[in-house]
Length: 116
Length: 113
Image 1: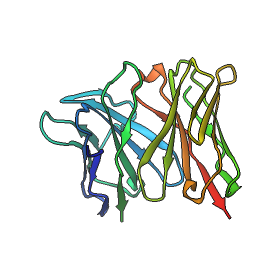
Image 2 (image 1 turned 180 degrees about the vertical axis):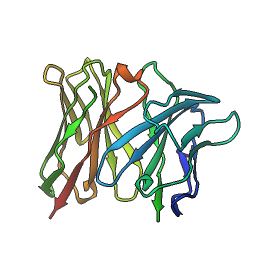
Image 3 (image 1 turned 60 degrees about the vertical axis):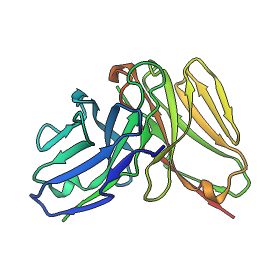
Image 4 (image 1 turned 120 degrees about the horizontal axis):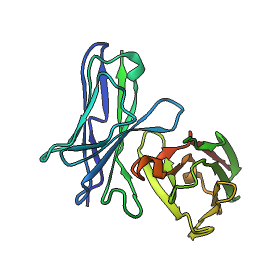
């Protein structure tokens, strides 16, 4: 059973370009979470999605950031017009359940975004 | 508010026990988690504890929970060089609908011979 897959593992963009980060959850998981980790810091929650629905986007910056989890295919985190402050590691996690019981989240290896 | 605090560094000798401490703020958190992150890698779930428990043991790992003081600790017995990593504690508060994990900044464990 493959774990959470993320690609690319490393992404370099120039200021003003767009970054698209992909996440395929574990088989049987329909709940996806995105977190951002700045250097030397812990992970900060960004957004929680189920198939075709955004459930909680309280951690997403209001501008330039968007996320989707279509019926078919991976979840996408999209950052438009990137700035240097967007440089971070972006982690995706998935879980089998949502709010009920132990919301055990399994993490992918992350995408390390560098903005030049 | 939501705030999880951990000490940033811990250095131990190989074979000794390591104790990593964490304090959290939201008493509504039902589960509390410990994750391990090795350099350049994602997070690996080590263990978790349900809030109605005081202690949980899993091989070399022991988790202690003091709900009154909102204090969580992870003890690693017989620490090995392969245990060198960053350890994050995390809570899942009801204020977040139990959906989001709130992480501490991580404790960097260095194991030396």
